[in-house]
Length: 173
Image (cartoon, rainbow, N blue to C red; front, side, top):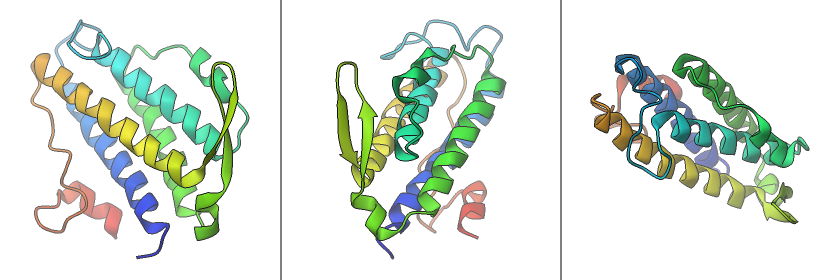
């Protein structure tokens, strides 16, 4: 395995997990997407919007896009189908970025605009942090989905051949 392959696989796993999770939202009762639910954020809508906006922040930094913290000025998306579409677009950008990485890119610096300072971070560190952030908050959304009455999907059947979800197999073709 090359040094960049794990980052490509993490991006593909993230895209698959998000698509799988968002598909489960179709089973939510009316009003549940915005209803109060336990977690760091007060609703499933708030949690998933947070994931999406933070993804945009870091993807912009990785691409040297220059938008910085302005991505947080985007309005939250109230419709789960529209948010699923926006998240899928962000996931595709990340997967494309990771698929184009060369080993020398991993140690390249990227600027991240913090509240009061610009901080340079390495590409590999940003990618690892982003993957951790996604898993952390998607786990919270998983619990919120269960709380709202929908059985959450299994999201850890991506990497291993043993019991790999059929929908994940397409990412390995």
